[in-house]
Image (cartoon, rainbow, N blue to C red; front, top):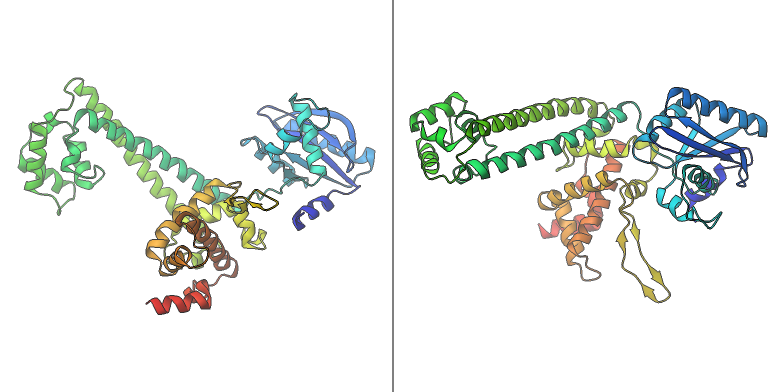
Amino acid sequence: MSITQNAKIRRVTDSTLVVGADIAKKVHVARASDARGIELGKPLSFDNTRDGFERLLSWLETLMVEYGFDNVILGVEPTGHYWMNLAQFLRHHGVGLVLVNPMHVKKTKELDDNNPTKNDRKDARVISQLVKDGRYSVPNIPEDIYAEIRVGMNQRGRLIEDLKRVQGRVHNWLDRFFPEFTSVFKDWEGQAALVCLHTFPLPVDVGSTTEVEIVRAWRDGGISRGVGVSRARQLLSAASTSIGITEGLQMARRELQILLGQYDLLHAQLEELLTEIEQLVGQIPGATQMMSMPGIGLVTAAGFIAEVGDISSYAHPRQIQKLAGLNLKENSSGSHNGRRQITKRGRPKLRALLFRCVIPLIAKNAEFKSLHRYYTERPENPLKKVQSIIALCCKLIRVMFVLWKRQVPYDPIQMLGPIHAERLQDAA
């Protein structure tokens, strides 16, 4: 049993009121017990409103006075986002809130009655029993500027998803009405291509213009290099032999106009949002030091801060590694040693952020490139490429942890250690 597990068990004493609450969208159910698991009082149903939360507080105070408790710990399942409002309310009133894994609730709900029945009252009881046994986790809920950055980065992710949908719809439009367009412009998001799509989107529109008019449209759009008469001639040739749909062109123009308007709006919103995020990140001590590492930019640093929260809450980078779901699991029995894999139980956004960051680091950062080569080519226990990437994700966590926590600039020698640093110098 881990040290943290022992600490969680010691947290629940004879003077602790243990409460489990089943969270729903509108009505929650809470049940209470003592440290031995003996149920106290009657179950409470309370609404997801301030009056309902006040009623929960009154119920807790009544039980504490009646049974002589001096502290309370309340456990919930992190079902969607519905628990967050209650968590904030209880934190402001000094009530400790912890989280119970929904899978643990599902697998232990038959221990008391050997019955697969599931309902809110039963789930609340199971949650309180798990909390009593120390089988919970303490949520790291961001506050102040860390909450601002997390909300901002979540919104950035949603805007990027919306932008990808719009990009896909523009591709769909081009495939239907002007499939030859991408043979003239490799990227329809280039400046010259966008001018064409705004000014003369359809083959029939292109055919009604001349080379000079097309070039003039590009110049009026602020494009002075890269495209000229030759490209205009290619566009006219592609339009003259186009196999695009020729029916419903009026609404086709309107469709593309709407899509390009959404495309421009999303880009503008992303730029504004990133500017605000940059201002917030600049106020975090240690953020500048994180970005001193080659290959780590604003988006990576902000995403890491958003997912991790206040670095002072962590004593060791292994805690962040577990938060990302990068800790290892294995199935072994007797002489059989099973395959070791990462658990993937944690914050998937943090894990994806680290993975996406390490890939370019392997290509462009000399230190990570050297470590990747060593891990995959060493004589003893060489790693597969994906295994090496996972190991480097953990390495990146340790590096960013030190840069952020100690507020020191990036040092390649310290990052590699003396042995790997010497190997890198010899290879150079």
